Length: 181
Image (tube, rainbow, N blue to C red; front, side, top):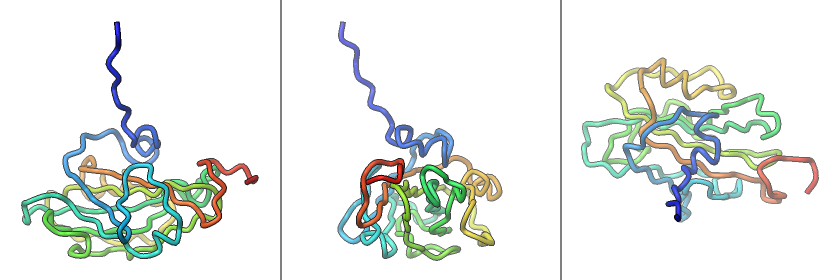
């Protein structure tokens, strides 16, 4: 008897679920573009490709619904010693469902990922807002906590999440840094 193969969730395989967010049911499609490169879960991108702010959009039709976008690095400063987990790269609120992130309220400006050691997961998490509200910028970027942020602002579970693997221009491969290339 053949068993039907059940595809594994790339967010589980990449340990985004667990390290950054709790399990959730995706309720919104999100698209992330760095220039002409579309991000899909597990895509490998060099630092030079992600130097400029990406275009992040949703595939919704209701302009009255708004979303919050969080972009973090759970592997900072290195995958073997993520003592700055999670490093906040970008925070945008009040993004209309029918628009892209440039139409939202940028709370923390985009900072391109820098990966001094190893390959880092860069995670985009999208939350549906129940109401527009004032969101305060955190005092620092390191040790941001996506779960705590969602709890403080009553955002609930994510509507979507997406991640890519970022590496230096002369990356040596593998997610874990051993010190040898």
